[in-house]
Each structure stands twice: as C-alpha cells, then as structure tokens.
Image 1: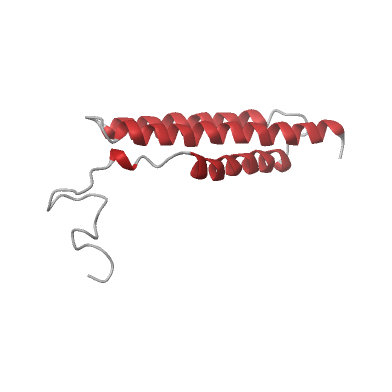
Image 2: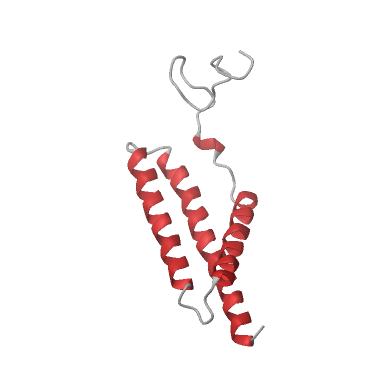
Length: 120
C-alpha cells in the first residue's frame, strides 16, 4: 500500500468520523429542540434534510481523494459508524424533555402505561 493511499484512507476515516459527529450531534440537538417546539415537524424534517445532505456531500467529496475507490468510502463509513457508537455512549438522553405521564387517550411514547404494550 502506497503512502498516499494510506494517507487517503486515514483522512477518509477521520472525515467519516467528523461527518458522523455532526450528523448524530445534530440529531441529538434536534430531538432536544423539537420536542418543545410549536412545530416539531419542521424541526425534524428540516434537520433530516440538512444532516443527510451534509453527509452525502461529504462522502461525495471523499470520492475526489487520490486513489479514490471503494476502500476510501469504506474507511469513511467506518469513521461514521465509530462516531455513531461514540454518540450513543457520550450524549446524554434528554429524558427530562419528556413528560412523566401522557394524558389518557393521547398517543405517545409510553404505550405500556396506556395498555398498548406487549401481552395486553
């Protein structure tokens, strides 16, 4: 493996990790903001479009690296997945953003408390 190919793979992995950190950090931020917003649909759809576009653009730019091939994209994907694993362990779950109990008859996250869980 040539030095430039090794550097391309290392850069692709670091770029994938940065893209993943921005994607999952943005998702975490969107959930925190969207749950208390008057228009959560706009938050979630807008965030999804922005985050997906950013990641697709980043991976497209990786294809311009010297020796760009499936190895470069795979290294970027490995970095992206590593960022996902780190994000699930580092970001706190915003449980304080969810109400402890939802009103009866209103669909929500706590379906077992409303009799909608498994085995009912």
